[in-house]
Length: 110
Image 1: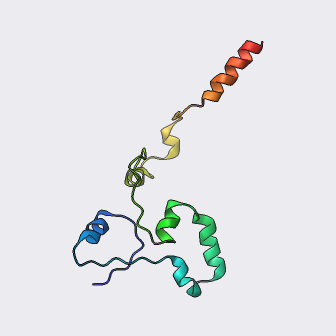
Image 2: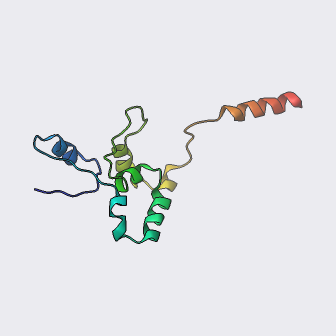
């Protein structure tokens, strides 16, 4: 069997890659650059360069989650589109300490 895919890390692919007798080869899009328009490849790199998607789609890498990350890619994928943005209301996820410092300086100066 010969399987060709862009390496989105799903359970089936993860399991298959661990099977004995499976040979995994990888190749970046650049090895096939002669078959693509130069402008098309530049556009892809302009859109995705330096991102996780670029590593997966352009470099042919299997990108696994960073164990130190707050969220896993699969979790975010399941949530994507689950609720419309306007349904979420306004939420504060983090707050800048600088905002408090500026407010305190303004109070002290007056």
